[in-house]
Image (tube, rainbow, N blue to C red; front, side, top):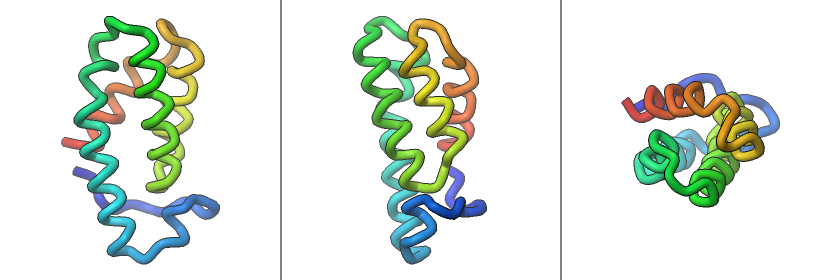
Length: 95
């Protein structure tokens, strides 16, 4: 799992102590693991939209603006949009 990396100014991640950020990123990884199956195989658009929305918000909090941006695009564009790219980035985050 990715636990480091640069923290983007203006995010919640930039304002919290490193130990708290590590905990937040661990929780984000757990959230990804629980929601990723719905995005890998979209069978319910509303569930996939809700998952993308939640992951976008959480990604911003932990300082992952690229994941946040992709998730917002997916949320707005389902069943289209950059879903495969988002799934790839999320999968790499928890690898």
